[in-house]
Image (cartoon, rainbow, N blue to C red; front, side, top):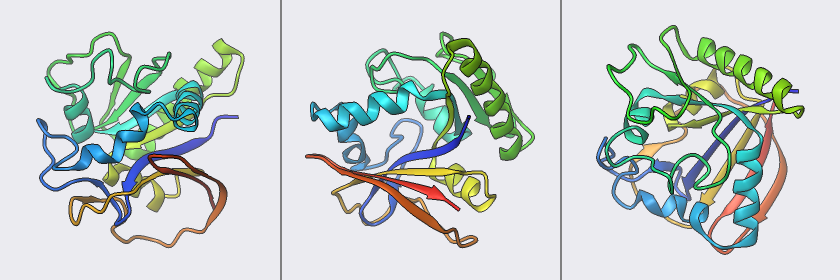
Length: 204
């Protein structure tokens, strides 16, 4: 069964980027420390990344994040989704208007202009098709940015929340949580590694 999973790295003080993020500096100043785990040799980090990539039937992201990953300093063969793990799921971008061109033409991009719920619904359809083709249950993963995941939580669209809690205090940047409706969480797993603590919650 396809689940909707929000998956994001976050600092101890709740930021998903450092200060001054932008198209040429997507993680902001110091924000790269949030993602050290994705490139580490720690066996638990590698397992978490491998399993998350393998279960991804479709990925949802906001337009600002798309502009970063598709920009000239964005993803490449070593730093794409899953950081080198095998698999290229469909990508669904929430945007007010599609871009005029796409650099990463080897990936399957869909641009949804009618809002986040419709983007998640489109991603679910992609994931269900991928599940049927592969013979295994695949999920929709909301990878960010922070505003997209926050909006999805507020709208009740998220069934599972995975946080990669990095041992860094950024002081400022893009916050993951900015208010909104209360949400009850049930902790499912805690995996501490040499670089991060991986936390998984069911969202009620």
